[in-house]
Every structure is written in structure tokens, then in C-alpha cells.
Amino acid sequence: MGKKLVAIIETVQRIYRRLYKALIGDHDLWQQLLNIAILITIAGSLISAIISIALNNSVIAITAFLFSTVFTAFCLYLSLKSSDIIYSAVLFACVSNFILLPIMFFTSGGIHGGMPLWQLVGLVVCWVMIRRKIFILVYVLGLVIQCGCVIYSVIHPEFVIPFSSDVQAAVDVIQSLVLVSLIFGIIFKYQTRAYERRGMLLDMANANLNQMNENITMHSMYTLAKTIDAKDRYTNGHSKRVAKYSRMIAQRLYLSSTEIEDITNMAMLHDIGKIGVPDTIINKPSSLSSDEYDIIKNHPVIGYEILSEMPEMSHIGVGVRWHHERYDGTGYPDRLKGDEIPLPARIICVADAYDAMTSNRSYRNHMTQDKVRDEIEKGKGTQFDPKIADIMLEIMNEDSGYTLCER
Image (cartoon, rainbow, N blue to C red; front, side, top):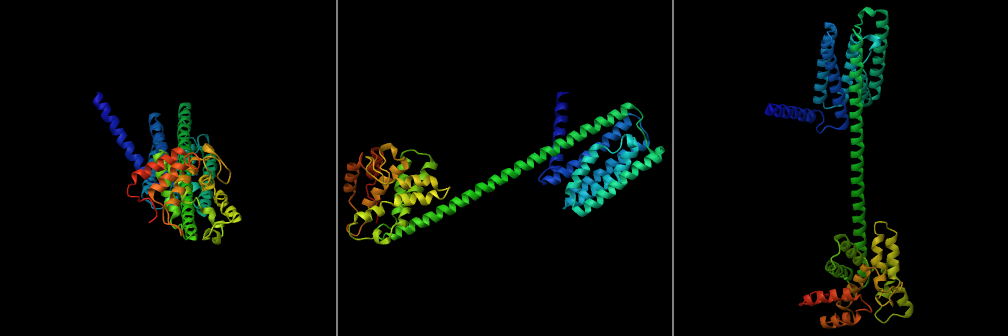
């Protein structure tokens, strides 16, 4: 007995899955609603036929309900096969208005029973999908048919099959309420599903757009950083190398991937403010005057202000503004001290200084590795965060071939 029950349940589940795939499947929302509206109309006609048989109603009423079931099933078949659901919706609306409505009206008590509510709701679903001109035509003709049925039933009550008992009337009302509740539940579900899907697609589109904007902005900024590097004939590739060294340090601090990417971008753009510094000052072969030095010291602030104008880039300004601050508080532009200096700026400070010492200049080639090591040791606690300086020294010790320098 148990095995038979399990087999029956599995069979029912398979039938349900097949029906669901056929009616819902990959169809769009309106196709699904139309199929469900027609399916419920089929169920309503079939249930009415079964109830009529159970209550021993007239053969005419039973035949009418069965005919309605078959005819509506044909509409469902066409709906599933049609490439344009508008035509299926029009067909179903015409069948409901011009065939099912009179049948249901005259076999379900006339004005005391009338058109089932579940059939009316199915019609409403169709009306929403039908094009305006066809909708007006179908709606007006349907209204004429409905009014004609009511008037004719009043003049010729002998053509109306009334409810044979209060029980039949009650069953008809309950049937309508159950089916209407089911229809509204399904419509609500699919409307909610449509809004959720639309919201999800909109969120994805916004996310993709934001990512594209950020990628475009970053590409533009990187191009600008290369352009700024090119302004200084002695620091070609400087930003790229500082970004590389900063990433190496950040990785050894076990920062998150997001933090590492942010610090790399900050380092790549750390000198972006030099766009506001005249080339004559950047490329001056002799020592800078105090006024000229004040101008070039302002480049971190200029860079910070540029990035602050871009919402998706504003967080990168942290490393740009304060990468020339010193750990002992004697740096610029804000004379921050120790841990007051944001971590990204402390990292870039060491990486920037390392590249400055390991790059060629007009007056010298890059320093020897031992000399660079000594300078970083001296700067611990004054110019550099000691912990970050130690990490840089650790990287240098592993670089026995001294590959981390400008060639």
C-alpha cells in the first residue's frame, strides 16, 4: 500500500512538473498569465460540469459545461502554439464573451447566477494584453452580448436553467470565490515576481554601469598619471613602480584584496596633482627656490581636490593628499604625525621614497642597494612608519639581484 501511494505521489509530481514547464516554463510574464487564466477557465468549466452531474442537473447544463471545457482547452492549445500571444488573448476573449458567457449565463441561473467571477477575471487578463482598437471592439461587443443575455432572460425565462436548490447556488458561489481567490493570488504572485525581476535587472544594470564608469574613470586617471610622469623627464614610469612597491607592502600587511587594490590605485595616482605644477618647475635642473618649492609642495592638495570631485574616486584621495607626511609630524601639507597619517599614505610614502632613491636622475644614477637600505634605516621613526620601513627592508633583502630599481 505504501509503495502504491509513493508511486501515485511521484506520478502526480511528474504531471505537475510537465504542466508547469508547459504553462510557465521560459515564457514571459504575460504569456504565463494568459495560460493560467485559460487554465482556470478550463478548471471552472470542468468543475461546473462535475457539480452539475453530482447534483443531477439537466443534461443541457452538463453538456454546455463540458463543451465549454473542450473549447477553452482548444484556446489553451493555440496559446501554447502561437508565436504572438495577442492573437491567443483575442481568441480567448472572443470565446469567453461570445460562447462561454451565454452558455454559463443560461445554464447557471440567469440573472440569479450570471457570469462566473473567475471567467470575468480571466477576461480582464486578456483585456490588459489586447491592443487598444481590438480591445474596444471586443469589449463593446462583449458588453452588447451580456446586456442581450440579461434582457432575453427576463423576457424569456423559460430558456434559463435555474439553480435547482439552495445547495447548488451555494456551491456555485463557493466555487467562484475559490477560483477568484486563486486567480488574484496568482496574479499578485507574478506581479510581485515581475517587479522583483525588474528590480534585480535594474540593480544589475546599475552595478554594471557603475563598474563601467569606474573602469572608464580609472583608465582615464591611469592615462593621466602616465602623462604626468612624462612631464618629468627624469621620472618616467615612476607612478607605475610606486604602485608596484605599494602593492607588495600591502600584501605583506595581509590587507584585504579590496584594500590592496585601493592602495595600488592611490599609489598609481599619488602624483596626479602635479598636473597643476608648471613644467619649468618640475624639470628645473638646478635647485628650487623657496617659492617654487612651495608650489610643488601643493601637488598633494591639488590631487586630492581633483579626486574629490569624482564620487567613485574620492576615497583614493586619502593616499594622494598625505603621502608626503612624515611619521615625526614634519611633513606636508597638514603636518600629521604617526598613526594620524592614514595607512595607505604611510605605505606610499615608503614606496615613493624607495623609487626616488632607486631611479636615475640627471645628476646621478640610482643609488646602490646598500645605500638605499641605510637611508630607509635612518628614516625609521622620523620619515617612515617603522613597521612599514621594516617590510620594505625585508623586500629588499629578498631582492638579492637588485631588480627593484629603474633600469
